Length: 202
Ligand SMILES: O=P(O)(O)OP(=O)(O)OP(=O)(O)OC[C@H]1O[C@@H](n2cnc3c(O)ncnc32)[C@H](O)[C@@H]1O
Ligand SMILES: [Mg+2]
Image (tube, rainbow, N blue to C red; front, top):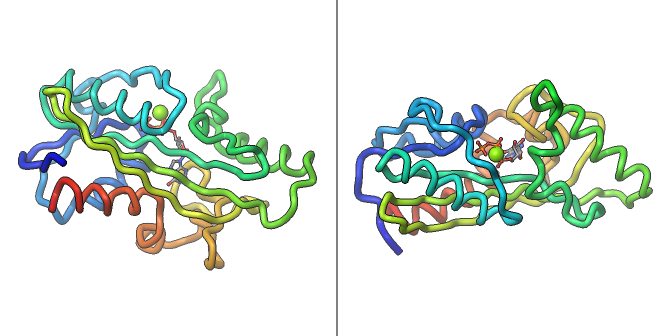
């Protein structure tokens, strides 16, 4: 496993919610971070059908373009009664001609579950795959998850994406209602990040 020894890191994501969370997780490490957008990078097409595949694609794209190590995050929600959908396509389910509409995507998930008369609880998991890639083509990949259920109606204004309908196991608040610090204690992103720290920052 390769250690991260530099002092600069590109965050290869265009998602403001992820950038906020990953910046908070990286804060103790004294690394100078900058986002893909600050480097004027385009969003590469996410053509792979796995979280790891798309995470690698995004991290290598940014590392090659900038000559600096890059950290990407590919994530999404899998719903058991929908055979794992939307999964890798979580962001795609929110696409409209006028940009992403997550309330619409969450409603689509709930409508499909209702149509199937899916049993309660409607088990789901958030997944996060982090990829740290270096400009010489080397990479390290870490996967995290948190289990819970999809609930309806949407609850809370915190977080981003599918947070208002995700109730983690053993909790009473959705990720959308939860204080961000509490989400950090249990999230799929934190799970993957802990493994990244053990592997590359230890
Ligand atoms: O690819 P980048 O630029 O990083 O940003 P993205 O938003 O397109 O990200 P993904 O391709 O990984 O799509 C994953 C989607 O899953 C959702 N998602 C991921 N993590 C989440 C979290 O912690 N809370 C709520 N939704 C999340 C979120 O809406 C994302 O848009
Ligand atoms: Mg994306």
